[in-house]
Image (cartoon, rainbow over all chains, first blue to last red; front, top):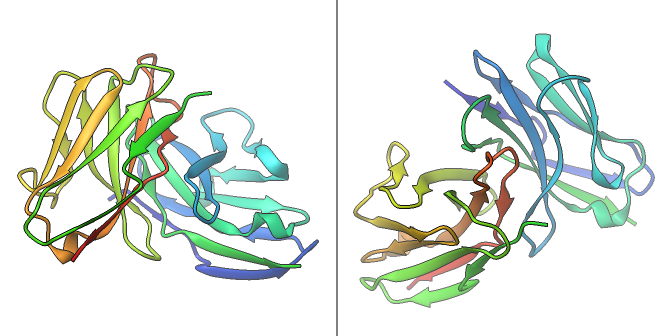
Length: 114
Length: 116
């Protein structure tokens, strides 16, 4: 069965701390992977995506993620978080070739203390 | 960039009534739109895939007679929650892909439904 698991449900960090949010997926074939962010009261926005090629992908706002195929992982990282990064983060997969069906993880709430 | 608009953003209705939520692609044509449901503190669950000019494809466990989807044009898909009950209260989000391939979906801001 296709699934996405995010290990951390609620993360609290101080500003300037480094961030790593875990994401593991279960799927037997080729996948496209995404990280979305949902700021309070706003809609989902794409942070970054991986389709193929370099497994280290860089996104907006200083975020990056690394696809490790052997570990079925796509962890999100940021070297130094800001208060404005407080939001809900969702990892999602899409079976390659599918028109758009996304399978989301449970989400991780990030709270950055000033 | 591509923008998806949802209306209404919030709606409160009485139990037993029907509610329609609209999803519009403002600056592009979307042959495919997706409807998700998000429960509080939980992830988004795909409800159905809406295809312009044809019947929607529903995910397992989603009642198609309960959640009516119409995708009559390339810029508009509607979700109608029929005979709503309190357990239907949720956050409904639509997303759209472009005719060239939904490589990246654009999401609407969501519609919060509260059924009294």
